[in-house]
Image 1 (cartoon, rainbow, N blue to C red):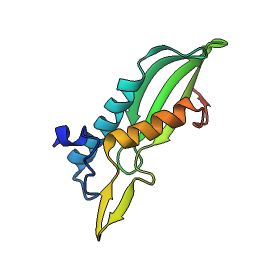
Image 2 (tube, helix red, strand yellow; image 1 turned 90 degrees about the vertical axis):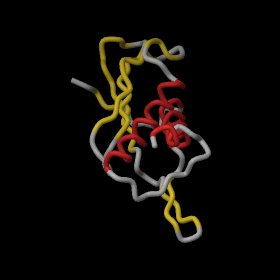
Image 3 (cartoon, rainbow, N blue to C red; image 1 turned 90 degrees about the horizontal axis):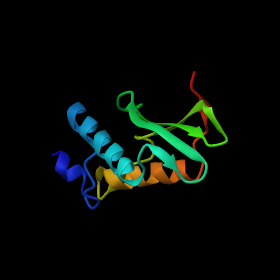
Image 4 (cartoon, rainbow, N blue to C red; image 1 turned 180 degrees about the vertical axis):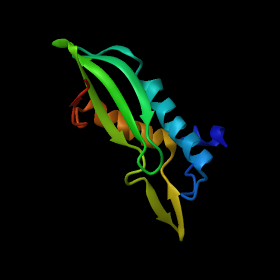
Length: 120
């Protein structure tokens, strides 16, 4: 089923098994990693890593990065995956596609909408 999660047109049902949910989360992460790689990102950030943390329904994407102006300070931007992605379509609850969810999370990170948290 993983291949279907990579399809931007595929809106999966919300009642995923735990294994399917993790595959969905991995597809979200893969779509973000296609857009942004670790290393210098733009004129103001150095990306250290982009990872999943937690399990459904609390799974988050964690961007660990450094500001160019203060490269010794490691920050994290944290975005929930499962928040506001389910929709009722003709009596069936469907999720946004994994690439759509990844795109929304990437856009929030790119726009500076994820509250930075200092990583110790």
